[in-house]
Amino acid sequence: MRLLIIDDQGELWGESSSVIRTSFASSYADDGFSAYLVKNLGFAALDIYGRSCQVRVRPAITTQATFETLIGWVASNDYQRVALSHFDGDWNLELHASPDLLSHRLMQLINTKQLTRPTDFIAQESSVDTLASYPALKSLVENWDMLTANIDASGLQRILRQLTQGRYTLLRYEDATDQLLIEDTGAGYTTYGKDWPKLARGAPFENQPDPDYGHWLRDTFAEAISSADPLVHNVDAIVSTPTFGRYRLRYKRLILPFHAKGNTWLLASSAMEDRIDLRQIEGLERAG
Image (cartoon, rainbow, N blue to C red; front, side, top):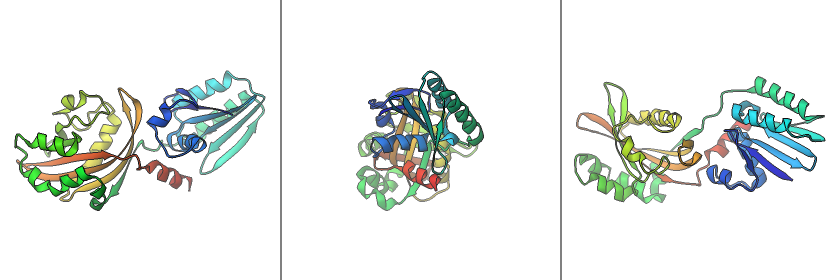
């Protein structure tokens, strides 16, 4: 059997490509991984057996780009047997007499079952107690009062860099404009490239290279503005980046709110964590 994957941007990948697995890492083996991509991310999988093929899709979340590449691929190949396996709470298998009939059925399913696509960004509230396994984040909580009382200190950035390895963001909330502004951010965030921290300073939090991710971050940080307690989340996000394309980020996030100089401030940091897999949970819930 030969396996081909069409991603949500309409790009076609061979089974030997490591790019997909690196970008959307999962603990699944090959068969499980392709089903995972179809069910959770709207990709299409093509299983080729000599002169026969099977198309696997989840019509409700298949993107237009995926659909166009899939239709073009089906039309350019002449198989003796064609099968369609589509997911809608469970896998449904259909046999079709020709690629033309398969294309017609695909268009019918996409048009009738297309729903709002599940978000690329998932956050799950966690407990401060879980930070015991993350020394940098735990240290921030333990030194919260000292750090926030010295917001004007010239050495604060140096301390934050050392504690977090540059993975920190200091945000200032302006009540008059309802804006979260990036006061400072460390060089430990490399998703957007090495120049991003310098360009980000002074900008609204949502003004990021991936605007959807930026607005989601702004919305999820909003609850911290009125909080007096640390907020901890597990995050599983698929972010569009200038360097890596669409890239999966999984991390433990800490947000510390405080008041100083007449403003509300948020000090945030995170630690990468590949053991977080909120999409597996999401997929199981949607499958019922």
